[in-house]
Every structure is written in C-alpha cells, then in structure tokens.
Length: 270
Image (tube, one colour):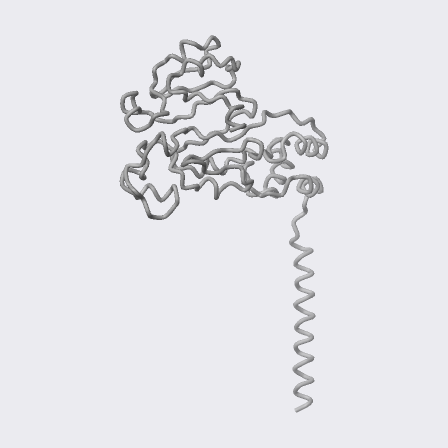
C-alpha cells in the first residue's frame, strides 16, 4: 500500500514537471514581443480605460500609437500633458489639440417642459423607446432626465438637475461616453472655450415647439441676422452655432426671444 502511494506521488510529480517544462517551452516559443515604447506609453496614460480614444482601453491605444495608427494626442483624458509625454517616447512633437467638453442641447427643465403623463417604470433613457410617445416628456426631442448619461460617465462630470442633464465642464474629459449613451443624441462635444451654445434640439416648427416647451428654439432667424461672423444658421428649424467662426460677441444670445442660446460661462457658474 505504501509503495502504491509512493508510486502515485512519483507519477504526479513527474507529470507536473513535464507540464511545467511544456508550459515554459511554449511561453518562449510562442511569446509575442512587446515594443518597449508600448509599455512606456501605457505607463504615462491615465489608465481610465474609458474608451474615449476610440480603442479598447489604454493598452489598445498604446499599441495603436506605436503602430502609427493613432496620433500621440489621441487620449482625451490625459490632454496636452500626456500627449507631450507620449510624444517624447515616440520621438515626435505632440500637436496641441483643442480641449473639448460635452454639452447637452436641451434646457427643457421640469418647469419649462412638462410631462404628458406620470411614469413609474424603469428609470433608463434607452428604455423609453418602448414607452408610449418615447417617454413622458412633452417635447419628444428633449432630455428625458433619467440619467443614463450619468451612469455612463466615468468621471462624475454629468448630473441631472431639474429634469435635464447638466455637464460640469471642469470635470468633463470629453471621453464621449455620454454622447454614445444618449438615445436622443442631445449631447455633443464642443470646444472648452466656446462662448455660446444652443440649448435645444427640436426639429419642429416654432408653433409646435412653443406648445410643448417654453425654452425651445422657434427658428425665428433673429440670431442669424444678428451674427456678423456668419457663425449662426438655422438648420431643420433649430439654430446651430459654428464654433470655429463664433467670436463670442453675444449678439445672437441677446436677440434670442426664447433665450435658448446659452452663455457658457453663466452655465458653468450656475
């Protein structure tokens, strides 16, 4: 009986050694060489793995940069400081990109855009696709206020205030998670230094807009007529600002009868 136990132990030991040898041989035979620059870049990236760069996490971006498939300033979270470090590793100059932040194109708060009915179901914006009228809000284009974007944001930069999502531009890293999540496509990335933005996405005509929201764009064209830099146009019944042309004079906002063109400094301080 003792010999049987010893024999079994020997067999198990030999088998273990053989498996260990095989694994060591396989790891050397089939190992994938990793560029040292990729490891170095991964060390300077923020490590949030938010996917805002368009790749599957920081490791995916590091590999893409080394292969020349992505620029050294591709990380929206790290910004210019990280881009400079990555540029040093790659031996290239990092072009200074424009810092961006998310902006919610809706100002239809609970007071300005009432609900058509009381909703007591799942608090998820995407679930509203299966709810009558696309949700309880009177404006079918407006923010539903259930916070799917809040859950998607890895930086705690967006919150629902008075029924509408609001972005803290100082905390926002422009990763784009909220943009992807919003089923109404109300969120866009705009320059951090933008002076004004239009807080409405309704495509309806003025009369229909006023029937459902006190703060909706009615497409009156007054903003267009006031703009001397040709930065404001009305497209699909809603005003749109070309941020590259906007000089921040504020004339469009002053003339807007619905006050839907928002001075972003005021929003930040609100």
